[in-house]
Amino acid sequence: MPGSLIMAKIITFGAKGMVGSRVLELLGKDFEFVAPDEREVDITKGEKLKAYLGKEKPQVIINFAAITDVNTCETERENKEGIVWKVNALAPGYLSELSHKNNFFMVQISTDMVFPGSEEDSGPYDESHKTGNDQNLAWYGASKAEGEAASLGEEGNAVVRIIYPARAHFPQKLDYARKILALHDEGKLYPMLINQQMNITYIDELAEALKVIASRRLSGIYHVASADLTTPYEFASYLIEKARGVKNVVQKNTFDEFIKGRDRRRYPQFGGLKVEKTQLTLGVQFSSWREIVDSLISSLQFE
Ligand SMILES: NC(=O)c1ccc[n+]([C@@H]2O[C@H](COP(=O)([O-])OP(=O)(O)OC[C@H]3O[C@@H](n4cnc5c(N)ncnc54)[C@H](OP(=O)(O)O)[C@@H]3O)[C@@H](O)[C@H]2O)c1
Image (cartoon, rainbow, N blue to C red; front, side, top):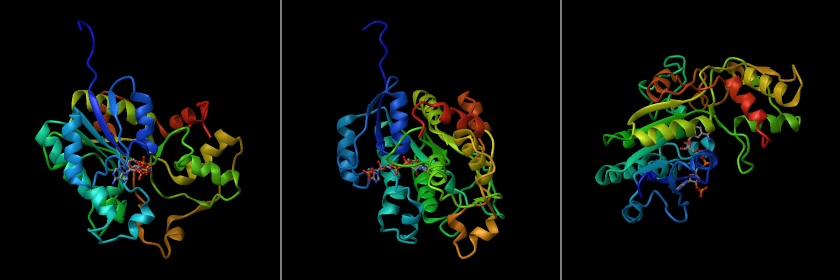
């Protein structure tokens, strides 16, 4: 029809999860989404995936699917036959190969935990910083790093890294901010670290970034996160003050105290994602973490 726009067809995997479901809510008018859940398409089953994609023929694939519970992932450390490795490391490889063969554009959603956050190799990391390895990363991060490499193994795909993704409303799973508030409300908030470096991702801004990346088929690595860094203590104090109107209620802890008896690979101290290059390439400006908290709180649905 003259004048009508043809919307790109995007197949998403893992879009019933916390991140993907919000992206689809926001971009539903911009693209034609097909979002099978795990029962319809298990991304670890290569042949079924091939048949499904052959039938659907999308222009773009966005893979949100992952085993995301870091502690669960750790129980499979070194097990490359396990489900964590299959979903997080191997499945992106099948998707990438199929995308290459069929000229689909693939976007793999990834994490800051592909970096060690250690003193020797500290963040904040830019988009081209070398990822860690099986030895210096949590198993979750190691499996996601392998998934990134597999996605980028074929030319033309994109990897989008996020960190502590937040949204105003998703009762099925609490994000970092809503978990802090829930613990505060129950009187169970533990002392927060004053010397751990982090930033957060506003999922609404991830949606905007994905819109640009998918429409323009922009390959390469992108970081979507707040433009500035914070610490858990600073973040929790600001959040609770703004959302609950109380000051000076958060207790402090130091990283050294907290990490005693724990595996450092599971808890990056000097983490965070730099976003300058991504902002420039996409022509977007990400909010500061305080602006993100303010937006979340002003959302009518925030709880
Ligand atoms: N949440 C975070 O803190 C965080 C931080 C940084 C990066 N990320 C990345 O962001 C992405 C989305 O995270 P999220 O928090 O939205 O995750 P989530 O809520 O745990 O959702 C993950 C989704 O993946 C699906 N899935 C798991 N195994 C699958 C399989 N074999 N085949 C098809 N689907 C499968 C799950 O389906 P079922 O529920 O049916 O199993 C679920 O819908 C992930 O790639 C994650 O690594 C998340």
